Amino acid sequence: MMIVTDTASDILESEAAELGIRLAPLDIAFGDVHCSRNTPAMLDEFYRLLTTSDEFPKTSQPAPDTWLGLFREAQENDEDVLVLTMTSDISGTYDSACMAARLSGYEDRIAVVDTRQAIICQYIVVRYAAAQCDAGKSLREVVELVSEFTKRVHVHGILGTLTYLRKGGRIPASVATIGNLLKIKPTISIHDGELVSPAKAKGTAAAKRIIWKDLETADLDPDWPVYFPYTSDRAAAEKLRDETAQRFGLDIENTRLRQVSGTIGAHLGPGAFGFAYVTKA
Image 1: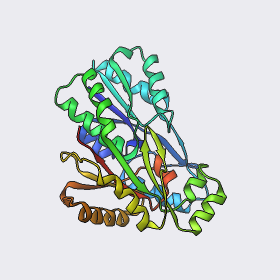
Image 2: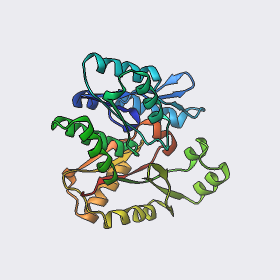
Image 3: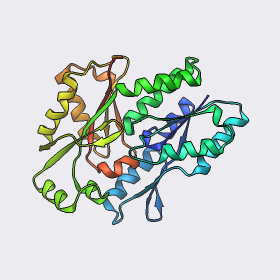
Image 4: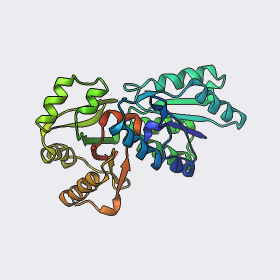
């Protein structure tokens, strides 16, 4: 079975190769400079440009030919295809993949799933799907399992600045300016497929106390690590990891740090960080 996901999943190219997963890149461009690959070097370059370039990056979903090329390859190899896209509430990637599947002439062997997730949560869902395929599950079985599993995956984070929500047109300039002056730190999460900001706090310490409340009642699945995603400030994620581990008795060995790719990172901005986890079924 061919598994395909887009690069909003934060999966590095090296990881995708190891897991046998194909990547459909979303293009990220600062003018004529493109940062579309999920490699450590490209992510470093993306966040450098995000803080130094006069242009806000433009993102575009995978081209139809990208999907069609993958589907033709699967047809030649007589493989089923499982496509796991970022939430359709944020991007048209799901619709693009569905359209390509209809045009491929191979639609009966292709399942396109809207994960209702992005970034680290989409990464977790893709890894889960790959494990189910390795266990010998059929395409239909994996689709059903993924549809239930994705509801158990959660992320909560803190933005370092409001500037990039303003640059991306998400909030007015006046709100960003006042919020930054007052050191307002919005919390963020993915809820029902939407990237939302459920609360705002004055200062990072207060914001951490807000997102920790979600962990207080979470029944964590011990088979999955707790992930600590970040955009450009790895040290901030490490500090949150250490504080969270001490506060909740987490085993540091069962935690992972993950860098957020540029598709969503452009809107979160540098200095964003948080945690993600899987709850028991």
